[in-house]
Amino acid sequence: MFIQTEDTPNPQSMKFLPGRPVLGEGATGMDFPTPESAEAGSPLAAELFAVDGVTGVYLGADFVTVTKSEAVEWLHVKPAALGVIADYLTAGLPVLKEGAQDRPGPATSLDEYEGEDRETVEQIIELIETRVRPAVAADGGDIVFKHYEPRTGVVFLSLHGACSGCPSSTMTLKAGIENLLKHYVPEVAKVEAVA
Image (cartoon, helix red, strand yellow):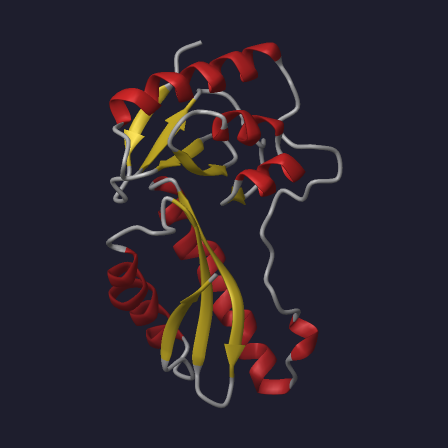
């Protein structure tokens, strides 16, 4: 199996493209920030955490993003991660455990908002889904809507994969996403990252 790799804006994260589905068509991604989360949801992610220096795994529809510790070099992590991904996908083993959800959904439900606030949240979610998420997925990450505070106009987003801990994530949030949301949704005052 030939697996392409791509650098991401986060020097500690690398995107692995196996040329076949990982989570599959229509899946938007699943983040495993700890070995415990991987053990609970994905055998593939758990095997990647067994590679010395791996600190995070993000599974996309057709890619895997691996995040490493600053203390180790890609020279040591990359070959081992390539081997795990190739062996796992070649064997045809299930990527997720039974019952694992393939998407980090919003932390709040639309039912929590009424009237104009609900319309505002629907606009925010639509912009994130159609304009933001595809762009950050190209860089091996994901950004998910968590909450909107109507009183202050603050939108809270969660960063995953290569976006989590990326040095340019603050610029992406402020100069990119915040400006986009403010342009289309005047009620938005600012954007904040949350865990």
